[in-house]
Length: 273
Image 1 (cartoon, rainbow, N blue to C red):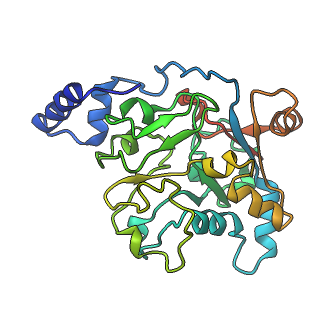
Image 2: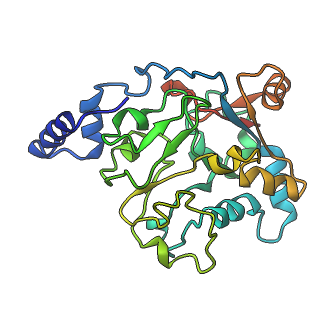
C-alpha cells in the first residue's frame, strides 16, 4: 500500500511546517494505533514463511562457547556484506542480539521467563503479516511479496526518508550511514543479486529479507543453515500456512511468544521459551 508523490510531499510538508519528526509524520499517515488499525495484505499463493527460534537451545549453545555463539549473525553478515562501521550508533541490523527484557518488554507473565531476564535473544525483522513499514513507504522500496509474505527492501528505490524506521515497532531497520563498497574487506560477489545495480548505496535503509535469494534456490536462510551446521538447531524456517510444516509442528508442541503481539502486526517470528 503505497503513497503517491503528491500525497507524500503534502504530508512531509505538514510535518516540516509543524516541526514534527519522523514518528509524528507516521502518525499523520495513520493516526492512533498505526499497527493495530491495518488490514492484512492478502497472499495470492498461500505460502507464509515464518521462523521459530528456540531460546533454550540458543542459550545452551552460547554457554558452550567461550565468547558466546554468533554463528547465525556471522553467516548473515558474511552473505549480505553487512558492514561494521565500529560505531554502535551506526550499526546495520540485519540480525542482532538484545536482552530478553528489552526484546519482550510487555510479557504479561514475567514469572515464566524470570530466568531469561538478562539473557541475549536473537532478533531480526519479523516479516509481519500486517507490516506498518510497507504502509508508510512513499516509494514502495519496502514491500510485501504476495507469493510468500516476505517483507522485502529494494535499497535502490529507497530515498532515505526513514519513515519505515519510525513505523517499525521492533527497531528492525537500520540507516546506512557509510559507503558499503568500503566494507567488509572480503565481499560476497553474489550480493547484491541485481546485476544491473551491483553496488549498494549509503543513505538508504537496510534490513533482513529472509534470504530471498537463497529461498529462490531452494536453500534455507543463511542464519538457519549456520545454526544447523553447528548442530544447535535453535532456528527453524518453514511455511506457516501448511498445517503439516515443521514450524506448525513446533508451535503445536511448545509454548511460544512473539514480540509486541499486542500491536496487531502479527510477527512471523516465534520464540520458544
